[in-house]
Length: 147
Image 1 (cartoon, one colour):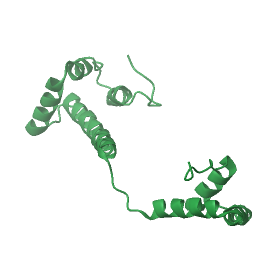
Image 2 (spheres, one colour; image 1 turned 135 degrees about the vertical axis):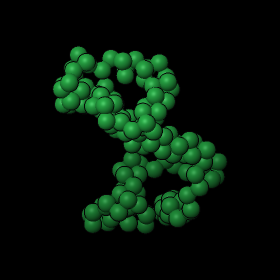
Image 3 (cartoon, one colour; image 1 turned 120 degrees about the horizontal axis):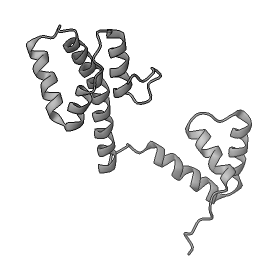
Image 4 (cartoon, one colour; image 1 turned 180 degrees about the horizontal axis):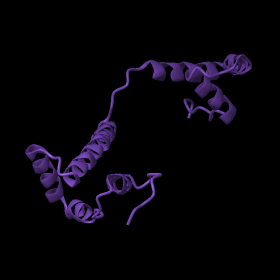
């Protein structure tokens, strides 16, 4: 039990966070310096924190999975406008064969895609179709929903 350290007071922990994020004020820096100089144990705690911040970051498996999910989401965010554009071209009868095939592949990817495609309003008003498509792809869209 000799090596057991007392817990760091919350106010000191906040000062340490501020110090390492470079957001600490002069007054807070003085408070932290005072705390560090109060004891050898406090100096050791500060040095340990400093060493941890200087160690190279080595991503673990969880970090890699998170990065992959973020990448997939970014790809989807880029992909959905493309699909919306293909749907618009299809509705205008202004779609190239390669694009038509890509749209067909997307429709066949899942029943939800096919259902979405088949529920597009039958109208010649392209602005209405455009708003409808984007409201379906982005549920949080500020555009009004068209039925």
